[in-house]
Image 1 (cartoon, rainbow, N blue to C red):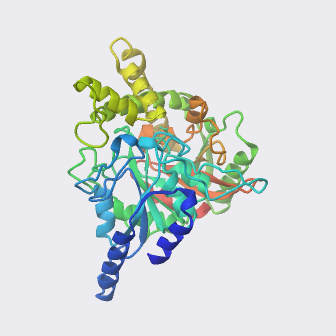
Image 2: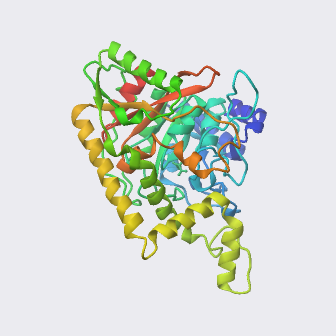
Image 3: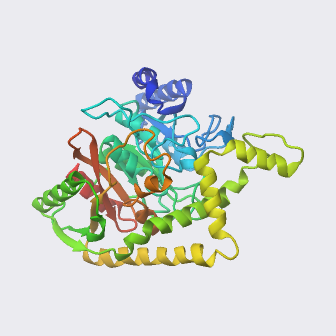
Length: 451
Ligand code: GLN
């Protein structure tokens, strides 16, 4: 814990943390030492972790990287973090993210952007770590922690994992409790781990998972011993390559690592099959209707009355308006406007209802594909890390970066990003392994074979 706290201090320029918690860390590490001495080690005894600042942590500032949660100190602990502490993990601090987890670059944070620890060989310009779990990804990549939590609504664990050269998994929807995690889009949000290896992610997910009566969408499913049974043996597995993911304009190097990943799996004894997910082209527009719709409803609670920022007006309505205008950043306001528009009378059928129908088609695409294969292999993102500030004035270009990740959230499936090599400029690239619902075991197995 001390070594990690020192590393965090040396690398403050990355801006990976919003809040550092050195006192808690040392106290928890001492308690872990005492348990280890008594031979009572938990699954993660003494392992120093960073927590995305979207998880409520009792007595520790929780911001969602938004001005509107100014000074909010939760009186309770999220289920996921409670489980991690019960397994013996040590809290180093709360990591930076896009405001309310809305973004793919970490640039929308009220607390400023995070720097990717990687730079191009050719120049030193600042690159984004991806988002929204950019602080967690940068902290793991820069060795400021042994692992971190992320959340993934449309790619926020997998895309930053790919941009920072680490491993991250979004588990099956319902695997981790959402209780105490600041809500973005409730039918898509899932927590998951980010770490250096597939095995570390398997261990962390084991500790984070499990049924929780406090979240009505949490599933009562057994949590397997993923780490203990992880082999990387892919003999006999059928790996699907969805042809629609070969999108026009994708960099040749990403196509190359994708092909190499498939070749490697084939040489290890897997069978490669081409599959089709015909509704893939509708996934981004569907996601960018459903996610803002749910967000606009979830964000209605920030009214300046109950917690966080309050900007006084002449009357109640003016106080609401002033608080929300000052408290939410531009991207969050854009999402609220899109969301309220697609849900409004007269537009509901044309947008929201239509999007729900297309979502069903996307689920059916995956069901059909998984009759022919056991897991899918795709790129995680259509690019490597980009320059800080790039795409910031073009929200649609930013949204397009999520093209390979949002389908998995719409269908509720597990998706893992594994680093598979560097591009010509020396930046990491990731491949994504998608599995059947509840089959994280196969996803980890394939991931282990290609990492
Ligand atoms: N980049 C996507 C968005 O901006 C996904 C974010 C996320 O997964 N939290 O909505």
